[in-house]
Length: 109
Image (cartoon, rainbow, N blue to C red; front, side, top):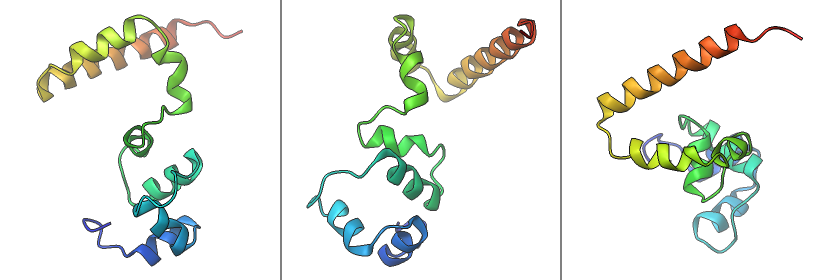
């Protein structure tokens, strides 16, 4: 909120929650809200990607659960965590190119 120069009241209003509700969450007087509410707050705060707020809250974004259940993914993530930003970008570019190629090769049903 500080880096975006947005007050608690402004954030609550823009995210569609009450200021009291948001205050209790921030002061750890209440458990975390739903994933949907966390994503709305992330959107208002312009977090990129918004799912990073879910991960910070210790939750797995729904669309990643299937992918994360593949046995190779934890190995890939551990290895990627040791890479430099430049090398990680190369890996990301390669993976995106492979995914695009695979999507093009799929025949429509």
